[in-house]
Length: 555
Image (tube, rainbow, N blue to C red; front, side, top):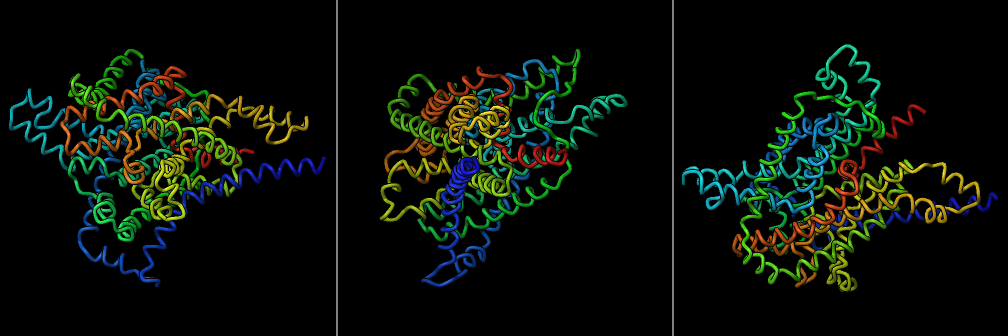
């Protein structure tokens, strides 16, 4: 019996160790190769590339502009996202399920789609130009192409992250504290004194994540002609094909992301929280004012999402749609194929990552940190690292094939798939596995006959969510797609400079149509829990660093 127990533990530890090694090896090795190559000149250690880059005035200026853009976008996202999250997660607001499902749409489309939508609405030949005087239309267009337009677009793009995270966190506050506070105060005071301080670590993490994601965004600033630091990295690599210079330019951005993430990780681990897994929570009754709140939320979403997306879609004529299908049908097919393969790999790998992260060990937390780092690193950094590692004669079979793009998907979105699966596994009754273990079932048998069937819904959610994120990917695919086999988001981005706007709008409509069926399936499957699962999966550190620590203290 002892030998059988040891063999079961050996199989489990071996599987989880291999999973951790695959994530760290495939994910972090490209970054290490980039760093080593940038510090090597003529076979000797040298900092000349970094000195050459940072002795000029342009890189610090661009980095300052990126920080300013990220700070403004994060401030707007936080100020709007927290109240909206409380309304959707804590009140009886009518239609909140539909609002939550609609808010996921910007996350599942390339970021520059919103920029195109605002251009279709506010550009010199946009929809508002036919209503306002010519001088006003010119002013709106000049306002769009610059810092204000980039801030508006990126704040709208990442607003759903803060809304869904806040909604998930408000459902995790201990209701006993709120009940006790309600005996002496009204809901606004309870929200300010109890709810918000309790969820502060999670909200601060969401704000920091939005800041880092905006800091690494390049497609929207490129379209709206606002020079930022990530564009400098792409210029060094794509325009001059200088791998070492691009690495030297990317290193400060990667270092900033790493330091901010490490500081936030340490602060949240030490923060006093009273969060628990989502369950029964107190609901705020809006009373007669609920329809007024509903109208306000609907109007806000109409302005931020409905108007730009509607303007973009209505800019395409039937002739444009026919031309788009003729010119980009092959790219759409490749996008669907690559997204399906990437989602399948991510679901399989995410299942084992979820098992690893369920263990709550120190090594599991380190792999979670690595996965989150890879998720929020700019895709251009990951793409350059993959090229530097695999662009060799011995690995040409992978470098010149779609396999490199699929590997990039696996690296960048592992945190999302592992987080969703881990949350699904956390809800499984442990008594079933324990009973099977007592009956003599090995670890693999328990996985195949108990864990897999019971977690099929979470695996379906993982597949659909990762499929949508792979389908929307632009920055990574732009660098590592096989020659002559670009995806639809890359094709659209390439035609934005040369093709007619109607054609570009039609191509965007094709991609949105491809993303719509999985989104509808997610929505039909469960109106409210699915957006929450997407939020918890994307911020998968919250259940690990906040809830388990609370449970450990209570035990």
